[in-house]
Image 1 (cartoon, rainbow, N blue to C red):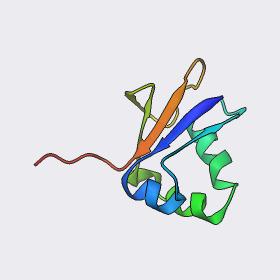
Image 2: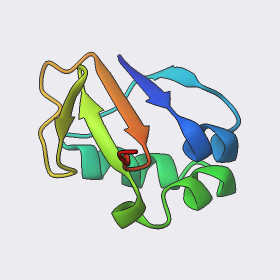
Image 3: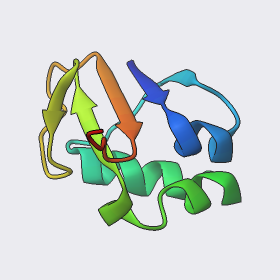
Length: 82
């Protein structure tokens, strides 16, 4: 089981801040493909991965990062300074 967290407009498109899912995905990219296959709201949230960042157990990661041993995956738009 992995906790998946959604922030900012990702949360708005999906309609919930977090969910716990069981997955066979080996990488973040595979998890995204699995989520996209669920419903239109996930397709809309993950349609442009260049507009998203992810973190594994609160550490920034790439979409090709492995999920072995990961407890939490978070998706959010890029952060900007100001």
